[in-house]
Each structure stands twice: as C-alpha cells, then as structure tokens.
Image: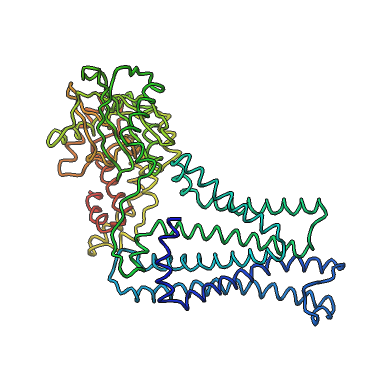
Length: 564
C-alpha cells in the first residue's frame, strides 16, 4: 500500500505533462493484450475447423458463407495479423515510453542527479505507464468475465483476496519474512498466476460435473481472459515494487519539488545478525552446540572488523568470567552470500592443511541463518602489528607460505577448479602487447619474448606449487607472545609456481635466495628450484596480472626484464 501511495503524486505529474503518452500506452497495452487473446484463442477454433465436423461460430455472416477451406485461410491469416498486432503494440510502447521519459525529464527542469539517470527515468516511466495500463486491462477483463462466466469472476476475486490476506498475515506473524518475500517476488507472482489459473480449471471441471457448464467457446475465452488478467495484476505488483525500490530516485526525477538525496542503505538479514542481542544469541548457540564450550556465568566481549566492502565480518570474541578475567578467545567470520566462494575456499584450505599454516587454530565451519560462518580459536594476548612490525611480519609470512607444502588432496581439488599460472599464460595475447609497444626496440623485445615463450612456460611448469595470498600485504597480521606472526583471513588463496606473488624489487634475487634457504629447511624442494627460477615465476606472475587487467603498457614495460 505504501508503494501505491508513493506513486500517486508521480502519476499526477505524468498526467499533467505527458497525458497523450499515457493514453497511447494504455491503448497500446490493450491492443497488445487483445492481439494476444486472439493469438491464443483462434488456433483452437482453427484446429476444430480442420477436423471437419465443427460449425464455426462468432464469425461474420459473409465469412460463414464462404467455403470451409477459405474460412481456414482467413482464420489463419487473422492469427498472423493478431500476433503482428501484439508485437507492434509492444514495440510502440517502448518507443512511446522512451520519448515520454525524455519529455518528462525536460519538463522537470533539473540538472544531473545521479549516474544512469536516463536509463532509470526510462525504466521508471515505462513501469508507471504499464502499471496503469495493467490496472485498466485487469478491470476490463473482469468486466468481460462478469458477462461470459460470472463464477470465474467470483473465483478470481476470492483468489486475489486470499493471496493478499495470506501475505499480510505471514508478514504480521513473522516480520522477517518481508525480506524473503521481496527477494522472491517474481516466483511468488508466478505462483499467484498459476495457482489462480488452476483454481479456474477446477471450477470448470466442477461445473461440468454438475452439468452446468456454459458454451465451450465462452469457457475457453473466459479462461484465457482470466489468465491474462492475473498476469497483468502480477505485472502491476512487480512494477510497483520495482518503483518502490528506487523511490527516492524516481521522485527526484519526476517531482519538481523533490531534491535528490541518496537514501540510507536498507538493513539486510546479514546486517541484522550483527545487532548486539541477535549476535550474542547465535554466538552462544554455536559455542554451546558446535564447539561444546561451557558458557555458564560468562559474558562475551565482542569487537567487529569489516572486510571485503562489508561482505565479511570478523568478530573477535573474548569469553569473560564473572570477575571480568579472560577465559578464552574465539574468532567468528561471517560471510555474506556474495562471498560464498571465498568462504568455501578458506574452509577447504584450513580444513585440509591448517596444521602447517601460520593461521589461527581452525575449529569448524557452520551455518548461521543460512550464512557461512567460520570459527577459530584466537589468543586474546596476541596484538595486531603496525608499522615496521607489520612489514617484518609480512616478510616472515611470505617465507612461511613458501615453506608450506600443500597437501595432495588440496592440490587436486584446486587443479579441478582453477587454472594455475602456466596454463593462464598459454592463452596470453601478444598482439595486444605489440600494439602497446612504446618504440621499435620494445616491439622487437616483445617478438623475441613470443619466440622464447614455450621455453619460459616449460621452466615455469617444472616449479613446485606454493600457496599465494594476492592481498597479503594488506592483510591484518597478529603477533603472538612467542614472536611468531599469524593471519586470520585466508579467502581468495591461490596455488602458483614457487616464487609467484613475491614483490619485485632490485633485491629480489638476494631476497629469494635467502627465502629459499629458509624454506628448504622445512620443505623438501627439487634440485632445479633456484632463486633465478623463482624470480622468473615472480616476474611472470606480475606480468600476467597486468595483462589480465588490460594494462598492456605496463606488461610491455616488463618484457626487457623477463628477457634478461
């Protein structure tokens, strides 16, 4: 109801500035639906005529007097014309709405409001006029049902009222359902149309059973009209809800006295899980049922950190006793649905190979109201590193990742899911690099690299794999009491040839030689693994990253270093 009331001032403005467009769109929608009605009804009449025993009704006397074959040709032609009318009317509606939206925008006399405003205005204008036309058609269809088949009219009204009451009672009983209903409104409206049509079929069968069925042609037309009316009602609801989702934009576009102001972001079910009361409820439930941790006479102290533009929440929890002393620390990471892939990646990595990683102790992967949630043990005495300590931690963690040998099961799962660096490089486009060459010398280097490419890829394929975190430098690093460094975020990890992901610098050869010496003490490395080959992997990894981002000039600038 709120969506309807919010649209009324906009309808008044549209009728004041573009009344002709509004009337034409309503007429075009009626013509489109009439053509669709004929397209659905006349084929049944045509099939009956082809059977040879049917005497056509509802045809003009001049047509009924013609030979049957001529009548068949005429009816077939009318079907084609009716469908053409339907398509032409839909095309006309699109053109009218685009022209009317431009005229309405000029009448509002406003400057630029937001990006894609022309598209938003055109879509909103079309939805507003189509919703008006849908209401008119549904009213005319109901009037026609009152003449053709009154029981179906009563049934359709009862069905609409029943669905409306059921939705209202469901939302009143469980307010949280409103989010789910809005998210699945298309399916709900589809069920509304199908359910109403099946109820109408049941009514027809019941009347046939009672020998009270009207003429068959009237029944067929009434069923088609009923279905079209239900579809238009469904479209009306969908249009109004779509406009309501963009209410502030639509009002700023069409109402002269409304300025544009971005609305506050609506709270989603994911956000509601982070409200203090709800948060403590599900945390205690997970600790008690999934981790078997006693919570009697304890309270929770929670600190929240946001990652991935708000789609991942890290909740650091201190379990305090009655005296306020810290008994234990836990980390809960809650993933929004847009980060489900990252959640699965982290769970696969920490579940299969956490014993050799500098990570928090992995406990479990659970579901909280349908959202992925990872539970880890966190040492409250550890502190988050800053400044130079953070830089030292990142350097130490790079060596730890190089020394970590991925389990075979993890490698097999990764290879079935993603392409590693040599496979991605085999698809590289040298023509784009050549076009980005700064001069003839660089163009010659690119051609030399193209000829040497198979040899470089072969050298890269012989390297063992290591774990790579693309955003390692920006990751939060915690220092334990014993001086070791640990990470809590492992989403978006990759397996790449040893050395990939190492930062490029003038000291890269020396740094990699030192790192390999330390890594070889913890991991058995093949004899062919040298600092020079690890540097090749690092340079090719950065080269591929620039190429994938279409930074062809930046990739071309790396060619000379690769050849060296």
